[in-house]
Structures are given as C-alpha cells and as structure tokens.
Image 1 (cartoon, rainbow, N blue to C red):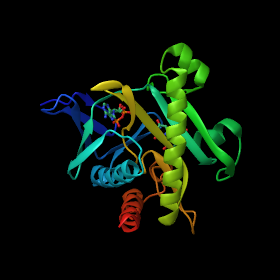
Image 2: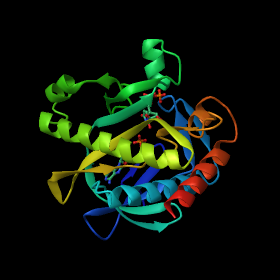
Image 3: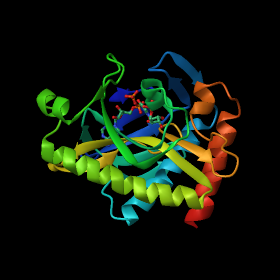
Length: 237
Ligand code: ADP
Ligand code: UDP
C-alpha cells in the first residue's frame, strides 16, 4: 500500500469510507522548511495523543474539526478535506519569525492576539501574506477569511485558557483549515495541534516545551512532549 500523501511529519491514507482518511503521525521531525531533519522515537505517538485530546476538547467547545476517532497509537481517522492553502498563525507573545521580522525581543506579551496568514507553499518557504493577497490569489474569499480569523481567535481563547491550567504559556501556534470533501461549503479545522506547531513555555520556569527544543538543539525534545502530554491528560481529567 502507498499513502495518498506523505508529508514531513504525517502520512495520509485512504480508508473504505470515501469521506474519511487515516492520518498517520510519523516519528520524523523537520525544521527550517525541511532543511533540518531528525527522527525521535515516540514522537508520532506523543503528537497523536496530544492532538487527539485537544481536538476532543475543541469539539466539545463547539469548534468544528476534521477529527473522527483515534484508531491506534499513531493513527486517527479524519474527515477528508480540501486544505485551504493558507496557514493561520496566532501569536500571544513575540517569538520566532515575528522577532526576526521586527527585531523585537522574544517573550513580549501582545496587548491583543496577532492573527497572520502564510501561503502554504514549501517551495516558496510559506511566505507571509495578507487578506488582499489571499483574495487576489484566489486562496479564500473575504467571507471565508472572516470565518478563519474568528475560528482561530476562538481556538486561541480555548487553548490559552486550557494550557494555562496545564502550567503552560501558549506563545503562538499554527492552524490549518479545509473544506469538507463531502460538503465543500463547510470549513473545518484540520491537520494537528501538538508541540510541533505550538510554542509552549512553562509558566514558572519559562522553559520551552515544544519544537524549539529541536530547532535550537536544546535537548530533551521528547521528554518535553511527554511532559506536555502528561499535563494535558491531567487537566482534561
Ligand atoms: P507537510 O505537508 O507540511 O509536510 P504533514 O507531514 O503534516 O505536512 O502532512 C499532512 C498533510 O495532510 C498536510 O499537507 C495537511 O495539510 C494535510 N491534511 C491535514 N488534515 C487533512 C485532512 N483532514 N484531509 C486532507 N488533508 C489533510
Ligand atoms: N508553525 C508551524 N508550521 C509552519 C510555520 C509555523 O507549525 O510551517 C508554527 C510554529 O511552530 C510556531 C508558530 O507556527 O508555533 C509561529 O511560527 P513562526 O512564524 O514564528 O515561524 P518559525 O519560528 O517556525 O520560523
């Protein structure tokens, strides 16, 4: 069997149901647009477990997502979507490319969350774009964009609150959305939510508990993911 799609961190497989896919979390890690590569034992399991718990919570809070069910340690069944080629990034504190672009020091709290968009294109390095680009590139309509912004802010409010209970500061994160293959009028949250695509800092110590440990060679990458999973489990219980 060959996957329908093999990405940097996941494989997407067909299922007997034409409206759903099996999403497999791999142990592979990449950073800097695929330039830095590694593999970590248990990464697939940890991200699947964290993402599954978070998607369950978001669904309960009324956020429509692609999530159907967890199949096993590294696989979930998801509704098949046509991914919008727009990555939605929400920032609560300065970090990463925001600091690079502005020269601001890391860790400054914003007065309000920043929502920004990038064009999902590995070839172009996911460049920052705005609503006008998105309209003219035909990536999404202004109505869709209003919906994405509103959903992203709702997810941010839910996650900020939840991670605070876990003793974690939600610095920033990336979301992807897609149109249901079975009903393209409906846009749902897709892909994953895990320490691969969120910056999470320990509230007390400020320690980084996310993929920056890999990006910056800080060590104990999976130990941090395991700690995040433990806290997520504890606080959902
Ligand atoms: P990348 O493509 O960036 O290397 P991944 O390794 O995470 O990323 O691969 C997963 C791919 O599947 C991504 O391109 C993502 O947009 C896409 N995807 C996520 N959820 C769904 C879904 N429900 N239906 C179809 N595609 C999805
Ligand atoms: N992010 C992601 N995938 C991307 C780009 C960003 O998951 O292709 C996440 C990243 O982990 C961080 C947030 O989005 O939590 C903001 O990332 P930033 O723009 O600062 O980019 P980076 O630091 O990755 O260059």
